Amino acid sequence: MKKVLSLTAITFALVAFMLTSCKKYPENDGMAFSSAKSRLCRTWNVDKVIENGIEYDAATAGMANQSIAYNRDGTFTASEGGISFNGTWEFGSKKETLVITITFFGMSASESIEILKLTKEELWAKITDGADTEEVHYVAS
Image (cartoon, rainbow, N blue to C red; front, side, top):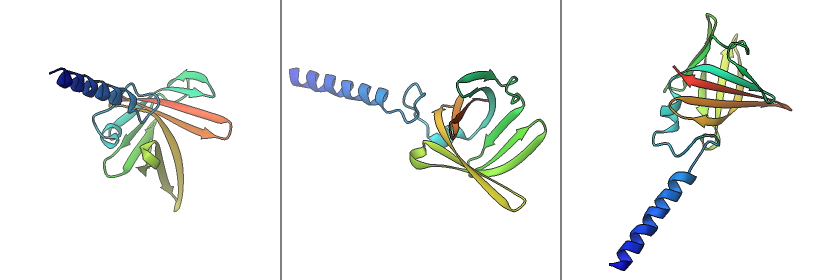
């Protein structure tokens, strides 16, 4: 009986350790039970922006009317103040980055975005361009 209790205690300890240590995104609070794709595929609105360490709310950053909708088929639609554009998205290596591609006038442009946090309610994305960084915090609408 003592062996069974010890084995049960060890099993619970291992499960608890796995649940607290298995984080894909650095800012997530814990392990998610839904796929990254199901958490991403929804419409997101800008909440705040952090540029080179300085935090701005969406209105101050000029992004109050900006939203982006990721679709399950790998497409997205972004809009800002009545102007919208479409593109494609895919997860990068280990689903830690998001690669978006926009095509206009026959030319394509791609950008890789680091995912810092991805839950059903929040998406934190970071873009690094040389010494400059921009972190955008989105909330689900």
